[in-house]
Length: 90
Image 1 (cartoon, rainbow, N blue to C red):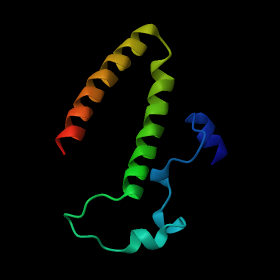
Image 2 (tube, rainbow, N blue to C red):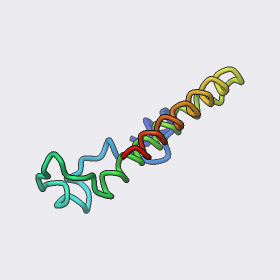
Image 3 (cartoon, helix red, strand yellow):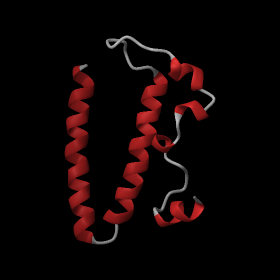
Image 4 (cartoon, rainbow, N blue to C red):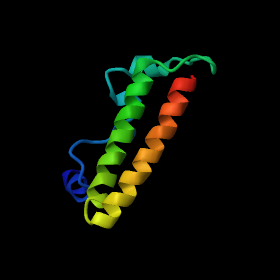
């Protein structure tokens, strides 16, 4: 596992790779929630951690050249504007 993490340039195991039943919050995730229920703080935290992990990997590859850096930087700026729009609409 440690070798695979070094190859993938990961400092920690992504939350998306950890089964919820292995965590201290297992009981929280075993309940069934209505479809219309608002996302709770833990759901937001898990999504944030997953996105952060993906962005770390993206940053590693994008920082290799000026061209890739500028391309990714522009796309991140565009996505940020779009996500701010969605955030403030809800």
